[in-house]
Length: 112
Image 1 (cartoon, rainbow, N blue to C red):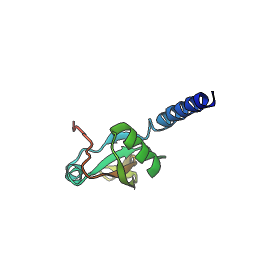
Image 2: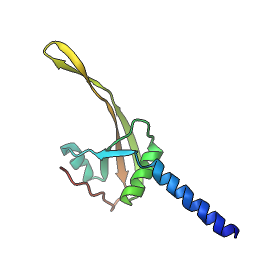
Image 3: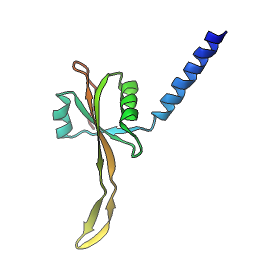
């Protein structure tokens, strides 16, 4: 009886964990530089502003079924937009994660 209850609690905790990881990854960055880094097992993703390295690692491992060795996070600040000499507003900043995957594993990212 106790074993059955433990399994149900474990299943619920997995569901909660998957729900928490749902909004972490926004999109992969598909650029020339990211394609070059992809050859050496580094992949670049845009992630949510309030995510951390542990959450990014868990999200990528659960979504892409690969083992992550290292996660580096970069905050890209907002930048001013100009129209002539006037500032017309700001281009919003974002958070970017560079992820290293174990040797021999790949993440399939299809560019637009």
